[in-house]
Length: 270
Image (cartoon, rainbow, N blue to C red; front, side, top):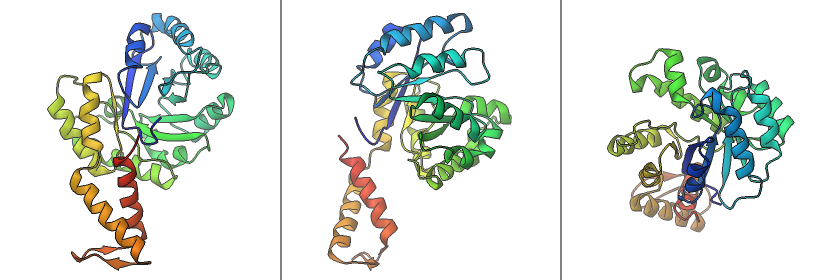
């Protein structure tokens, strides 16, 4: 289990044969989706199939995205998921208030990941991110958010993206992963989008097809140049205490050293 998930592969809960394949595809996290990927008349079957599949612990890291709390399926989803030994995390969609996270975390005892998909969720981003010790991460649901805001151009979401990155870090959480790139054939566009997300402070990305995984991983792993720079910074910091200047004139302080250490940890992740 890597401490730095870069790839989060979503698979529909009503297709257990696809889930079984996904568990072996190398994604850092497999997210079994009971929500958007499942039609209303398939919700019960998806829940039952997921319960059967995760009735025993799994070597892969498996999360389940339940239906939103205001839907008629949410309570049954939560009851079923809570008892499954194969579940490592719970992804809660359309979170708008911190109280929703508290309610689910205390009812299930599971690690919770909140998806912010509305203007109200973005407005309450820090309150949600700091709502409960069991909250392990936040991320955006960009399709719903785009519709809620009436945004057509991709750049129109950048303020929201930055807002959630800042909220996560301010709450002491890991940098959030990017939302999905919906065109599974557009790997060039995916790579460019990942590069932009990385520049905003995201770490890793959700995927909806295994072919997207290596593109995401390459985009978010440190380059050889970044690794070399990080090694130089860490080495200099071990030789001198406090603030210092590198031979190339760059000023280095504790925050820069910590960032370099994170880069090396990511580069050498299991």
